[in-house]
Length: 49
Image (cartoon, rainbow, N blue to C red; front, side, top):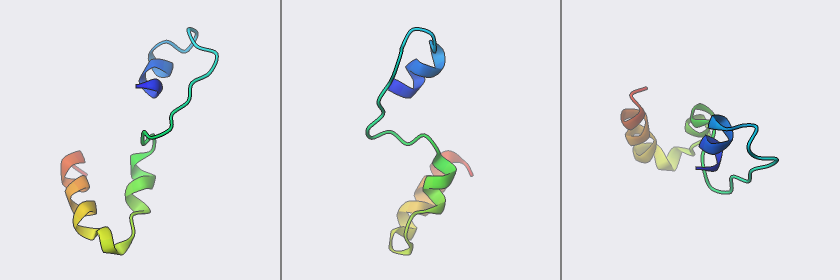
C-alpha cells in the first residue's frame, strides 16, 4: 500500500517505508531457492510469466 501511495501521489509524502511488500517481482522470482520450486512455479502461473 505504501508503494502504491508513493507512486500515485509522489508529492504528498516526504518518505515512505515498505517493510514487507515485494517491489521487484522478477528479482524475487529469480532468487527463490531450489527447495521452493513448487512455490516458484505457482507464482509464475499466478503472474502469467
